[in-house]
Image (cartoon, rainbow, N blue to C red; front, side, top):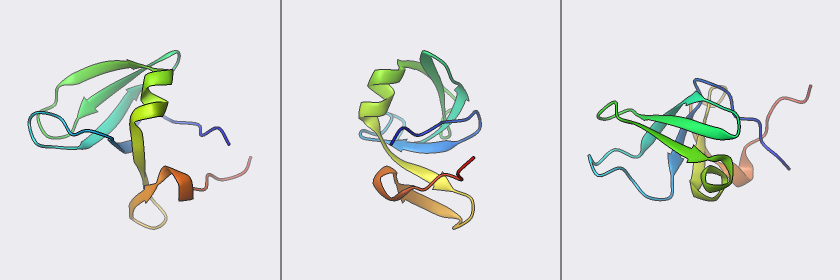
Length: 77
């Protein structure tokens, strides 16, 4: 199952940022993913392949909590 990531989604990655925060907001999608650290506002670029390997959890607005990528269900369109 391929997940569709959208601008504004909040995710956690495998390793935290050196500032101590592990929550990121997606700022741009495409071939590369642009992420903004929610702790220090620093922005990084990851290739989509690298992002797919590193992402662990995504914020589910319906449940109002972080959910593992394995258990995350997107709305069927």
